[in-house]
Length: 208
Image (cartoon, rainbow, N blue to C red; front, side, top):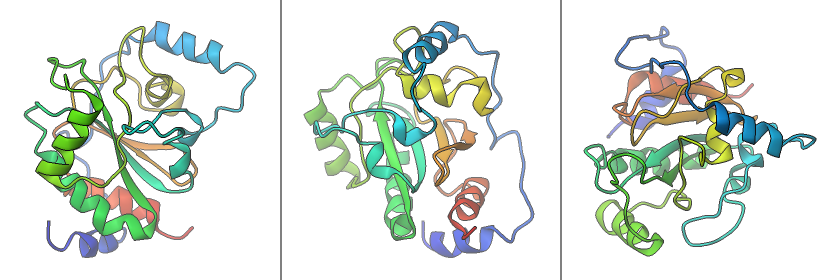
C-alpha cells in the first residue's frame, strides 16, 4: 500500500466520491432488543461516545476503548478464517502509517459469521502477529448482532447515530471521529486503500 500517506493527505482536497460498492446499504435493523437493553443499561449515565464503552483487550487489559479517546478510530469486526482475513495486512499498514497523526485501527473478534473466529485469545493473537504482524489494538471476542450484542455495537448501529442495521459479515467497518462519534460505515469488502475511506480518514484527521 505504498503512497497511502500521500493519498490520505491529498484526499481532503479531492471531490467527494460516492458509489454503491463503497458505501454500505442496510436493511431495516433487527436488533431492537439489544438497543432497548443498551438504553436501559445506560439510563442515567453519560455514555456519549465510542470510548465510553468498556471492552477488555485480547490480552486481558481493561478499558481498551478508553485508551483511544481523542483519536480517529477505524472499528473492524475481525475473524481469522474468513475470505476477508487478508484485509489484516492492509489494515496493519494503514494503522502503522497514520498512527502518529492520531489514528488507530481496532479489531474486535467475532465468531457469529460462519464460526470463522473459533480460537482462544492466545490463538487469535498468535495468528494476527505471526501472519500479518498486527500491532493495532485487538479486543476480546464479542457478539455484534442479536440479543447478546455488545453495547458498543448496539450504539454503533443505533438509528440515532445515522448508520442503522445489523452487521452483515466479518470486516464491516465504522469510522469514529476524535469526538467519539460515528462518521461513516463501510461494508465488509471495503479495503484499507479504498479512496473514499482514505478521504474520510484524512478529513477526520485534518485540523478543525
